[in-house]
Length: 229
Length: 320
Image 1 (cartoon, one colour):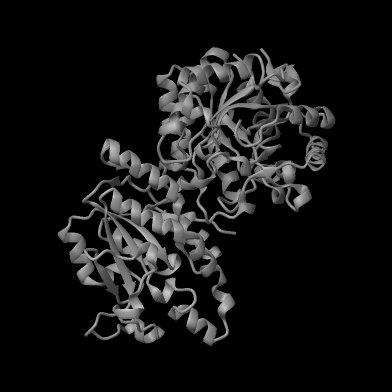
Image 2: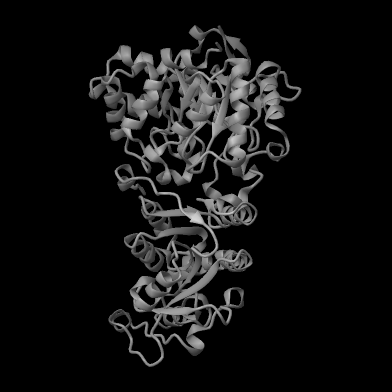
């Protein structure tokens, strides 16, 4: 049984305004370690430990949502929303974080380990930030990036909804920034966790929309200006 | 003073024990804009009831438990079939009231986008006054469904058409108020926003049934709606993944204590196989077998239960 009793006590999620400049699309943890389901680090480690089936729901969902991620990245660019990437890993010249050491997920955000599928390959002018743990805002450079551009809210797509994306949404809320999670452009580790995480994320913090709904909203934004969600 | 069922008009006294918000025949896989649900939704999660023999048995089991009437709230766009409902009603002996109006945007027929509000209102009025298509079978209630945190777009258009049709026909408006985004809505229901628009369109609040209040209830919001004259419908009773029945019973009891007995309705919103008795669930009998005993334990009297099950539905669904 999946219940969300916190929603009985917390306030409603305030509206967020989608508009170029203050709204960006965040693509999180969709680099090779998570997104390459054949040769990526997650797939390789799972195969090595003979627990590949444990990741079947993640892989299946990622395949399902991949087309939506690509559509949203293209739509964001077409509607002049900034696109920014955040990837678990460490920068060239830096050392792995404590989290990365503890988990053994020590990936340098450079070279083959930050290759992206063609559908959401960053453009040269788009920034790719490393993140030391699950949350994107644990990287101070990413926080400064958002502050410098006066970003007010982020549309979030990516992998590991129940770990990284949830953490990022909490961190955004802590800073007074809005988040809009696209429910069919995020891949959870398990489907059970997906239902529970989306329900809990929404207790006053985060909005949820489907890809089709967001594309409709962006079309309205193009013709009528800022649109409230 | 009549209530319109799929087999013709009945008097309010004939309605008897009534479940005011249920599905008997529906299939959400028919929804025209399924992409709005999102691609990660499992096809098994769609609302679907379409086995005639089994549904007939469910209705008979309901009648045998003391039930008399069901308001079937499936709208045009995802499997509403008044001929099937009429056959089920005749076979089971249960009065069935069918619904005109509009469900949430993914389930809206294409014509909602194409027609004017006035033309939509004419269409709904015809379904109440003359019948659906050429069937001659008439609907007895209107419906407005809002699945976002605001009333906007096609759902707003539909609500305005429903309001016009209500003023012309006098039937009640039942509602779907929250949907999957209920955590974004103050007090868990957009009934407050719907009421604002309905009032602006000239609808008497006493003709408005605020549904799904027990997905995420706030008793202060619910009492405010009742004070305005609306019916407050606890209609997902038994769906404890949203709210424990124990809490529902406490809320209903508290509203009775605060003087709102005459505004309360109760139902289950059954819409999937696994909720029915043939699927291992409690079907349309959950109220009798599980929930009424809870209310009794909390001190709700038989006379008050009679109000909840009989008196209030008769008042709600009588054309005025």
